[in-house]
Amino acid sequence: TQSTRPQRLLHAVQKNATRGDPRSVVKAIDNFCRQKEWAMNVGDEKGCILDSVVSEVNPVTVLELGTYCGYSTVRIASLLPPRAKIITLEFNPDYAKIARQVIAWAGLEDKIQVVEGPSGEWIPKMKEQFGVKTFDLVFLDHWKDRYLPDTKLLEDCGLLRKGTILLADNVICPGTPDYLEYVRNSPRYKSQYFKSHLEYTKAEDGLEKSVFLG
Ligand SMILES: O=C(NCCCCCn1ccnc1)c1cc(-c2ccc(F)cc2)cc(O)c1O
Ligand SMILES: [Mg+2]
Image (cartoon, rainbow, N blue to C red):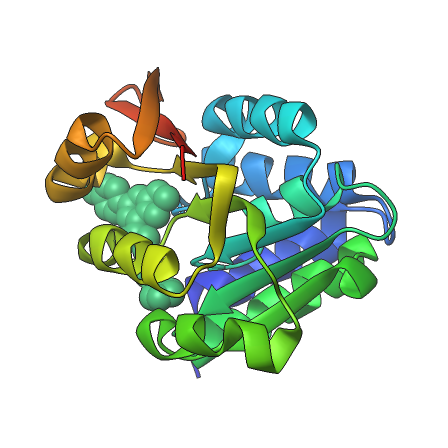
């Protein structure tokens, strides 16, 4: 039976990366995507912007929406202080299965909780299920038409605090127009656009960083 692209990406990690070395896992995925097959990881160019935001925020509690194969999950987790945790939501069970193995190869299982299912159902359960008070950083990288409704849901569930940082991938390509309009015009956010390129291509894309003002 034919393998899937996430399976081939996992095999590239297991073949080329060193167990327990998150940076080698990130490099192996970027090399696979540049040399073999494009895949929708945030990539190295936008990934460096992600790294700088994570290092600046120094978050203790992180929410990632959209795990895919775990590339950005590993990038973020490798920069977290010792007791910090990242909860990452993935709707697609096949993606989640691969991500867990990529995360295990990087040796970051203790910092990461992969949760399977729809973000719209899981966000209201974050407090009771995972003992989360508020998130310090939210990385949005899932269905582009879910960025806005899930942001409003995070507000309504009291999961954002004054100073929480929302960092959104793909605000240009594929694009998240309703989300951009909201965070750029709402008095409750201070937004900043980081121009970059769509992973592994020359097409424009970028990250939008928004601070929740409470
Ligand atoms: O669709 C994307 N991500 C969501 C994947 C499914 C999320 C499932 N889920 C997880 C939790 N709740 C729901 C995505 C797409 C592209 C892209 C860009 C250009 C192109 F021609 C084709 C594709 C680039 C990205 O960087 C992306 O992130
Ligand atoms: Mg993306």
